[in-house]
Length: 63
Image (cartoon, rainbow, N blue to C red; front, side, top):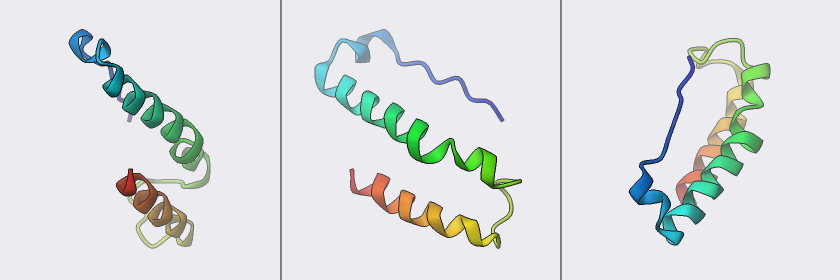
């Protein structure tokens, strides 16, 4: 699944929002995208490798 996420122009002008978007972009590229190469399917809920995702989910929720 490919999802092209674009920010509305009025949100790009807000410096506080831009910091959030930059953090999200960096986080997804560094922490989430590598799982595309490790997990065969996003629906494999019993795959033990998914436990690392729980740690990442907690980290993202804390932000």
